[in-house]
Length: 226
Image (cartoon, rainbow, N blue to C red):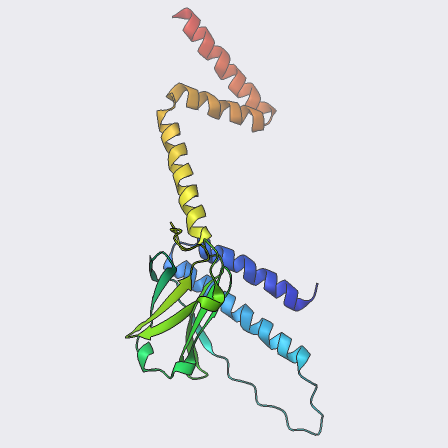
C-alpha cells in the first residue's frame, strides 16, 4: 500500500471521528489535522503526475500553503425538495464569487471559502449525509455573512430527522446509554453486588477467588444463623 493510500485511510478515519466528536475544540483539532493530511495527499499526487524538471531549469518556488479553518457548526432547515444548510462566514458577501466553491456528492458536500487569497480559507466538509441528494441539482447562494447551501433531496417529500448519519448514530447511542443507566438504577442493590462479586471471581487470581468464596460462605452462615 503506497503512502497516498495510507494517508487516505487516515483521513477517512479522522472524518468518522469528526462526525462523532461533540466538543468544538476537539472538532477543530481533528479538522486541522485532517486538512493537513489532505494537503499532503494533493502534494504527493501532484509530484507523481508532474514531470521531473530538468536540472538546467531553475527550481520552482513552492506554492504557499493555505491555512485552513474547519467549520464545525451550521444551522439547517428543510422543505419537501431541499435540505438547507446555513453556514456563517464573516464578510463572505464581500469576496469575489470565484473564491467561494462547493462540491456536491451523492451523500456529501465540501464548501470552501478563500477569505484571504492563497493564504487563508474556511471549509465545511460533510461526508455522511443521512440521505441521498442529487448533486447536479444542488447549489449555493451567498448572503450577508452567510452561505446558504441547497441540497436537492433524492426523495422528494422525505423528512430528514438529522443532517448526517453520525448524528443519528450518536442519538441512538445516547438513548441506549440512558436506557441502560435507568435499568441499572432499577436493579436490586443486592443483585448488583452479586454481579460485581461474580465478575471479580471470574477475572481474579486464586487468592481473590478464595477471599470471595470465604466471604460468600460467611454470608450464608450468618443468614442461616439469623
